[in-house]
Length: 329
Ligand code: NAD
Image 1 (cartoon, rainbow, N blue to C red):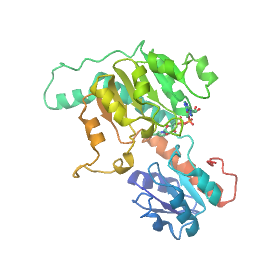
Image 2: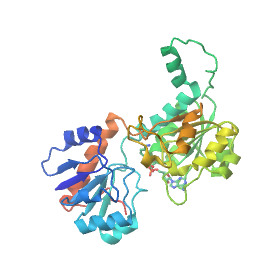
Image 3: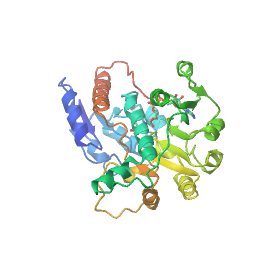
């Protein structure tokens, strides 16, 4: 079975090749992301493998169908970039990796919190330049702070557990509260109460029509002055323009993001010699109380192993006509 792997990076090749031992799958790696210009690369293949910023809309699905593609294997959990209804209509199967080390993402959210809070990124640079001053490095304790978690699925639950370890009070909002998590002391509240009471708000829900711009000028108004916002989920959960305004007015005291609304034009590439045209991200980068990472929360050895093995098993299940356990319908 021939599979075209789009948006491929060296770490994808390394882990996929390590675990692709069955001899039943031929993987061909393309650096190009999937878009209307690159879709022709998929001709002569049986399936494609894509990542978070590949475009899998109705137009591309139609072209893939004409080429005979029967399976799209997402090597990620989120599927907001795929037109699922169109894929169903065309009978193209979509599979994903529903869980790969939720701790990888949860721990990265905590890394963003601790970096912002204790200003370790600034301290690191200062000390390297022989500047041992502590001026303007004052942080705050996490113990006894209130942390609001929106979305308590696999990643949100792992994040709650870590924050409880810091002796934080953990509030949560989810459409489907998790009783086992509530039994550990996580308090489920209405989303408005969470916005009003939290010192730190961390987003762990998927991006969909209900959650798009869940952080906007109205919800920002409800929040505590100086709130810390953390987003390791999807860029579209935050109305970036509204948050920039809130940063300027000091309503938002800290922002840590691993995802960004227009990240598909920027993230995963070395643009250090380019003139970046995205004014919004340049404004965000200019704030001293903003830390941005380029969608790296998933990037641990454990997660890459899990992504490779689950994706390869999904492809083999399809090849053998078995039930697709990780199908997205
Ligand atoms: P999950 O499906 O286990 O959990 C999502 C939770 O969100 C569920 O409990 C669900 O009930 C809840 N939810 C759905 N709609 C909601 C709403 N309107 N309001 C509140 N809660 C709602 O997913 P997960 O594995 O925990 O992943 C969460 C998200 O993290 C993914 O959707 C993906 O976008 C993101 N993610 C990011 C990275 C990264 O590298 N930055 C990696 C993996 C996943």
